[in-house]
Amino acid sequence: MHAWVVNPPVSGVHLEKVPDPAPGPDEVKVRVLECGLCGTDREIVAGRYGSPPPGRKGLVLGHENFGEVVEVGRSVQDLRVGDEVVATVRRGCGICRFCRTQRSDFCETGLFTERGIKGRDGYLAEFYVDRPEYLVRVPRPHRLSAVLLEPLSVAEKAVQQAKRILDRSELTPGCDAGRPRKALVVGTGAMGMLSALVLAAEGFEVTAMDPRGEKTSASTVLSGIGAKYRDGSPGLSVLGSERFDLVLEAAGSAALDFELTTLLAPNGCLLLLGLPGDIGKPFPLAGGEIVQRLVLQNQAIVGSVNANRRYFELGLRHLTAFRRRWGTVAEQLVSQRLPWTDFESVVTGRRPSGIKCVLTIGG
Ligand code: BGC
Image: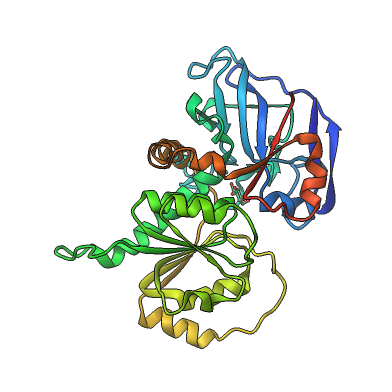
């Protein structure tokens, strides 16, 4: 079969012939139908992130996935040929308390692997095999948005973390919520937009800001869900004196992240999701002022990565809720579907102007 292979930390990506995987008795074989392209893939192709499986040079890329079961090992009970599935990304270290309880997204040893990213082949291939515990069956009505389930799971986990942090100040008996929580989403790529959908569905009053002011359909999608859009290219001053209980960052700039602390309301939380593109570039920082504000206003900064199966399942429930409330809003986030043979030009070219670029594999 064919697969897109990288050789980290060497930059570049090649469509190569690799062995066709055969499922063991407790595994299923999946024909990949679609893969989403995200910032992490760009970082890996640029040679700045990712690692091959032990003893190998090459890594099959791809982690945002959707496929169809084509073969089932003899001891598999929960899946059948023809089922459509999305696979989770992280595989636990098998050692720490979190990995041993299906929460490898909180792995403590760092010895986890991630398919298509760290030490384990991914899904940008014609087929893959895996065990049913890592596969989430997707109901037919969601097949056009299924490829968004992996990034959606990351947004789901992040929002649940933030809610727990915000709850600190509101859990006193007799202290009611008073008003809806206000969230600012920074970044209107797929991660930002999926987070905006989750937050709006969870009752937050949502504003989403694109720090680069790119021309995408984000503003239309946001108005469709009752959220506000701000072109942030002139800087954070576009938000005036508005302050937010939650600032969710999905833009990938460390310099911007520290600036965002100025937008937090008292008791607020800054939630960081983006891998910084400006890593290794020093910048001046008013550290004392930032720390003083954080302390005096009970504010928190937290990072969130990956998601376990529970959040994929929550994502599916939310896809149903989004559809009921806002129609095909999730599908609208897929701005391009291209044949997977175009992958190299898309991943190495200028950032495509849409929200999510999806590669279709096979016919
Ligand atoms: C993936 C996550 C992964 C993270 C860090 C993201 O792009 O969606 O599953 O944990 O990269 O490698």
